Amino acid sequence: MKQLKVKIHTHPIYIFWMLKIIFDMFYQLKMLTVIITAFAILLLIIAITKRFPLKPCISDTIVILIALMFTGSWLKSPELYLDYLKIISSLLLYFLGRFYVKDIDTVWESLTSSLLFALVINLIVCLAGKGTIVWGSAVTYRGMYFFKTDFAVMLCYFLITWIYNKKMEKTDFIPLAIAVVLIVLCNARIIYLCTIVALFIFFQYRKNKKIISFKNVLMLGCAFLVCIYALRFVSNTKFFQDRGLLSLHFDKLSDLMNASNTQGRNEIWTLLLTAFNRQNIFTKIFGAAMNFNQIFGYSGLNEHNTYVKVLINTGYCGLVLFALLFFIAIKEINDTPDRKLSCYTLSVLMVFLIVGFSVPTILYTNCSWIPLFMIGGCISSAQENYNVEVVET
Image: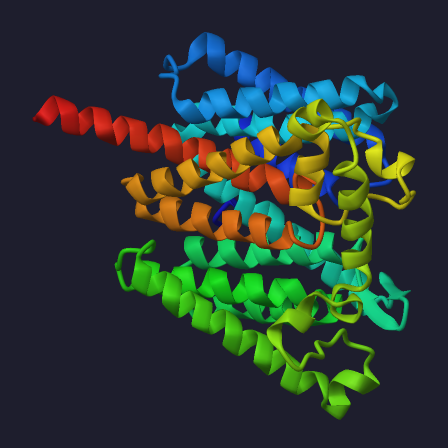
C-alpha cells in the first residue's frame, strides 16, 4: 500500500508569505501586523549577514530617502505608529526582495498555495451568506477583509499568480472562474481595469513578445477605453441596477472624476490638496504630519489615494522621488532576464499603481508587499544579468 507523502516546507521565505496572506484576513488583530513585520525584519537581518553582498543602486537610495521622509512625517504625529509601521514595512519588503530573488521559485510556490487557500476560505464564507455589506446604495462583498478593495486586490493577485504558475489545464480554470465571480461580487470597478491590464501582459508573455513598447502602451490604452465604455454600457442594464452593482455614468471622459463615479473621493482630494497648498513652502516641499487629513477638514479613514498621501506626507520632493522609483523599476523590469519574474512583477505593480488612484495602497500591506518585494527581486536580477554581460564582453 502506497504511503501518502506530505511535503512540509520549512524555508523561511515560504513560511513568511504563507503567514502574510493568512494574516491579511484577520485585520482586526493589529498585533499580527507587528508580528509579520518583525518576521520580515528578521529575514532581512539574516539576509544581510549570510547572503550575497548587495550592490547598491540608485533605487536603493530613493527608497531610503522616501523612508526618511515618511519618518519625518510620522515624528510630527507619533500616535500614528501603526500607519508608519505599515508604510516602512512596505519599503522594507523592497530590500527583502533584493536579497531573496534567488529563492523566487519558493516564493512562487508559497504565494500560489496561500492565495488559493485564501480564495477557498472566502468562497466558503460567501456560500455561508457572510461578508456582504452595503456601502451607500451599493451592495458589496468583502469576505474576511475590512474593505471590498482589499478582497478584490487579493483576488487579482491570486489570478495573476495562478496563471503564471500553472499549466492552465482544464481544472486550473475552475479557481480562475471562482475568482472572477467573486471580483464581480466585490463591486470594485477599478479591479476590472487591473484584470484587463494583467491579462494583456500575460498574453504578451505567452507570445514571447516584448512587454514595454510604444505599440503595447497604445494597445493597452485602447483596451482601457473599451473597458470603460463597456462598463458604462452594462451600468444601464437591468442586471446591474437590480443587484446594486457600482456603475459608471458619463457623457465625456472628464466626467469620470465627478462625485458619482469616484464615490465622493474627488471632494476629499480637493479639500486636502487645497489645505496642503496653503501650508508654508517648507511643508509643501518636504511634507506635513501623518495626521494631516484629520487636522484639516477631513476626519475620515484616509486620503483614498496613494499619490495624494505621498504628496501630503512627503511633499513635492517625496512625490517626485516616488514617481522616479517606479520609473526606474519599470526600466529594470524590462531588463530582467527572467521573463516570468519580469511580467509577473509588472502585472502586480500595475495593480498597485492603478488601485492607488482609489485607495492609499502604500498604506495597505496587502496591496504593497508583493509588488515591492518583486521590484527588489527584478532589480537584483537585472544587476546580475548586467554583470554577466560585462564579464562576457
